[in-house]
Image 1 (cartoon, rainbow, N blue to C red):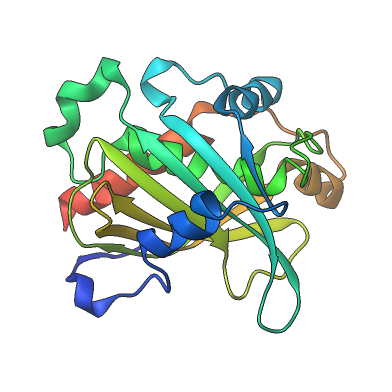
Image 2: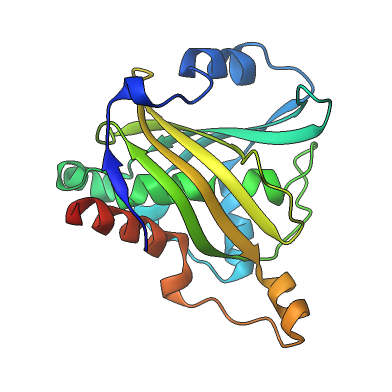
Length: 220
């Protein structure tokens, strides 16, 4: 259960503009930033048993950055370029938050947790989404979006990945902000419960989470 609220851009802040992010990730690329091929990400999803069809393969480019925070802790964030797949392009106006674009934004978090600084796959464990603290919706999604994905300020658990995602349109306007999206590693669940790792059910996928967010918007 939760609450979604339509608001104005002035009432929320991402902490960075798309122009700044593009400069940091793309224009001034250094050894701390790598570009991961989208196919590599979807190959990892395939090994998890999450087989995304063409309508939910919206990642065009994905950049992974390692950097130090103000308190000198090492952190990783991601900037992903998203494009609404051709197969569902005509449905853009049917949604405020198009499920394919929101799903692709959630997918892009895989670059933080499943790849290292050289672009090598270091993890193939699936994660079970279970919570979203807050969502700010300023304006509908466009055909092309940019997603800035980073750890939440209070992300401190080894078994739970808690992230924030800001979605910008092609003009750089902040459209959506997801705060405190949490997913727990299924390997950790199996260890805690001393049971076999459960199979992923369709209603636990990020696609269903994206649809659930859209339903919440419609009901407000």
